[in-house]
Length: 180
Image 1 (cartoon, rainbow, N blue to C red):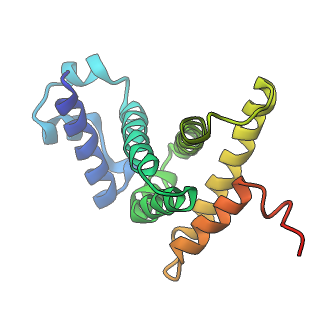
Image 2: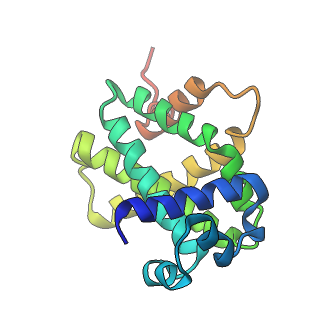
C-alpha cells in the first residue's frame, strides 16, 4: 500500500473518530470511506488500533521535525503542547473508547519517542547508563503525558506556560533551581 493510501486510511479514521467516537467505527466503515477492499486493509493493518498506532507514529515524526527546527527547547515544547491541545477532541474520543488501555499505551509511546528523539537529536542524549536513560525516558514520558492529559482539555490552558513548565522539569531547573 503506498504511503498516500496508508495516510488516507489513517486520516479517514481520525476524522471518523472525531465525528462519532472510536467504538462506533468498524473496518467495514473505514474501507468503504476509503474506497479500498477489506483485503487491502488487512494486508497492511492488523486492526483499527494498528491504524491509530501508525497515525501516532506519523504525527510524532511530523511534530518532531517541526520541533527540531525550533530555536529553543521551550519553542519546541510549545509546538508539542499546541499539537496536543489542537488534537484534544481526538485524544478524548480515543481515551473514552473500549480500547482505552491501547490508546494510553500508544500515547505514552508517542510521548516517550518524541522526548527520546528530541533529546538525542538536539543534545546527543544525556551522559547516563543505558538503564538510567531508559528509566529517565519512562519517567518523563509518564509525567509529561499526565500533564498533557490533565491540562490540554482546559479552555483556559496557557500553552506557553505549560510548555515552559515541562521544559524546566526536563532541564531539572525546577528540581535544582539556581541559587539567588
